[in-house]
Image (cartoon, rainbow, N blue to C red; front, side):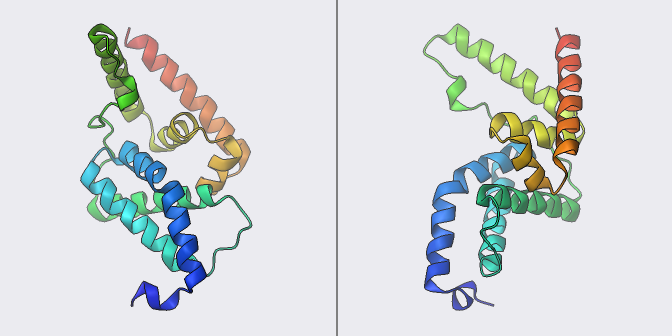
Length: 174
């Protein structure tokens, strides 16, 4: 079934605009979640294909960013259910923003980044997801709730527990 035949010209423009605006952020989220760039590319492509297939039923009643994250999360879950792989965060590359001209600062940022990555990978998936969405993607609890199809109070509870778990592991690692 060809996607292009079923989507109007306006729909194609809508998809292209959504991809231009959100692709990088969705891809980075998937990389953080799965830790493998090749898998992340496949999962991200699949997420945007699913979005394209659903564009005719999408209603602008909500936040498109949250809608795309929800599709990405579901695609990650589907991928790992199919492959029965774990969700490693240890393989994540450090972001370019951590690198400075001072080698000592770069080394310290790398060490801290590895520590954060290690602690995140030790948390339960539901806590990992809310922390990544909140602190790496600057989403508010309401947006996270929309992405995960959960009540805002549940998200706030998970964030609180995740922060406590993270802080405890951070102190234990000192």
